[in-house]
Length: 65
Image (tube, rainbow, N blue to C red; front, side, top):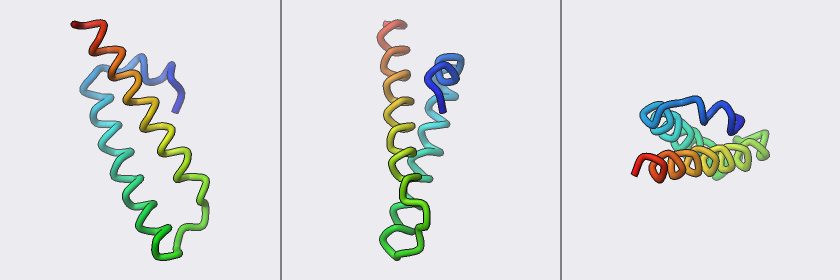
């Protein structure tokens, strides 16, 4: 997910995307813990996507307030 895609979203859409990413991260961590995760790089990508979403949400909150 690119930052430009996130900037076009509303705050509610960003929150929804963040919830999806957090759920995906949880599932990936569980798979990793049980040895079922094949693509370990996906964990890193999801973690970075979460950071991107949170950064955009913070910027939106600061611009509104």
